[in-house]
Length: 341
Image 1: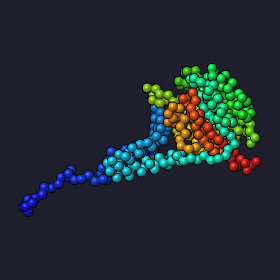
Image 2: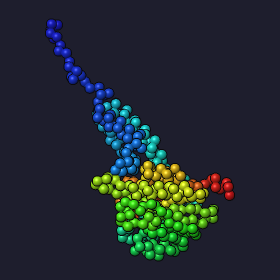
Image 3: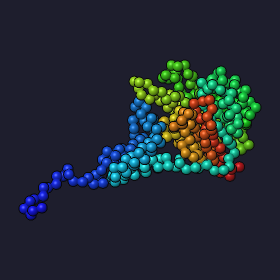
Image 4: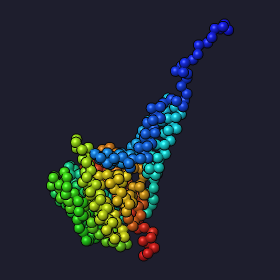
């Protein structure tokens, strides 16, 4: 090029985009995901949004590899670094659930199962549950039509049982001091549908060779969707608070809560319960232990929560005719209790 010919200046928009400036949308999405994970307790409860976020939060981790693939495709260092925030927070919240925390041993096997009001084969469900080997078997959503079937099919394996409304407990060990628990559901759509407040939870005492064990069986109100109000959780939340109050007032050394709580232990509505009781899945399970829906489980709403006993194993059983999976756990008498005896 002749010396007197001047090379035209390169315009800024013609300059190559650096790897740091690539993928601004991916970077923003990664940061927003991280903030959602970090600040999810601050999400409004209006329209049940906060409860929905709490329940679905474990699945937010599925967006991390998707965003990472986008960052690699765009060769965006900023997006890749931004993903450290959601990845770190997600692992802090849920990473422990990916480990197998089960261990050998245990004194008592328990199972809880929402058997489903529309279960087409209650007899088959009862036989499958009896074959589980559980010492205690809690059933929820028992219909008047199916109750005689469960009582007949489970009688040989479980000589002791009690039923309060739609929930029941079958036991290999003697039961006593059984009474209903008021879930304070006499308001809203559940009351309008004629659902009594004292037919969905019970408290009973199991006589064991190591002392008494108090067992609660509960089926909390469903989460409903209304076009005008969004997700309606009032009935479920009142039941959770009522259970928390009952447990707080219960001076028993050992307590086991079995049931369909229609929510995860990460849901803010269960703070009162989880402050007093441990989740066996979190303490001794492997993975998330999803139990609903049975055809493709995506959430764990069937729970075993304990106090004064030590979880050693937690898992889900094969599907029955219900839309829930049965949830099983093995419990051991805690070390402190053993030392006192």
